[in-house]
Figure (tube, rainbow, N blue to C red):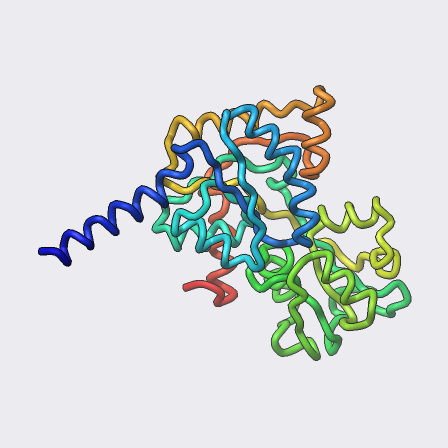
Length: 285
C-alpha cells in the first residue's frame, strides 16, 4: 500500500512538472541545431521577447546539441514549442503518436531548396561530376542538409553510399560550408536560406565555394507545439506569429532574423512528402 502511494505521488508530481510549466507562466522553447548555438540564440532573442509580450509569459530558450534531443524533449514534455525541420517534424509526429501540432511556417518554407556546393576552383560542372568525390551532408536528421538532397542525388543517378568516395556529416549547414572551403570535403549540400545569409555576410568560407546545383522545391521548417499544450495558448502563439508584419519596423527586424517575409499557417499533411522520402531512404519505417 505504501509502495502504491509513493508511486501515485511520484506520478502526479511528474505530470504536474511536465505539464504545468507553461501553466505556471513559462514557455520552454528550443530549435534544431542547424546552425551554431550562438547564432540560434541571436536569431531567437528578439522573437522570444516579442512572444513574451504577446503571451504574457516568460520565454526560456534552451539550445541543444543534436536534432534528436529536440524531438525527445518535445515528446517527453520538456519543451512546449520547437523550431523543427520537415524531417524532424515527421520524427516528432511518430515519437508523439501524432500529437505534435505544427502551427506556422515561414512563407518561404512552402518552396524550400538546398544548394550543392563545390570549391570555386573545382572542376565539377554538374551533379554527375560528384561521383567518386568526398561529400559532406549536414546532420543525418536534417531535411535540407541530408534527406531531400539525398533523394535528389538518387534521382540524378547518384547513390551516395556507393558512388561517393566518402560521406561525412558536418552537423550543421554553416559547418558544411567550412568543410568544403577547407578541403575536408570536395562537395557538400546545405539549405538555401543559410547559404544566402552567409553570402550576404561575406562569410570567409562562403567566398571560397560556389553553387553547383539547386534542388527542386519541397516543404521544410515549422514551429511545432506539444499536443497537450493549452489550446488557448496554442491559439495565442499562432496569432502572434501571424501578426508579425513587415510594415512594422520592429516586426521586420524579427522577420529578417528569421529569414522570412512572413509566417503563414501550416498543417501536418504538408509534410507527407517528407515522410515518404524518409521511408524511401530507409531512415524511418
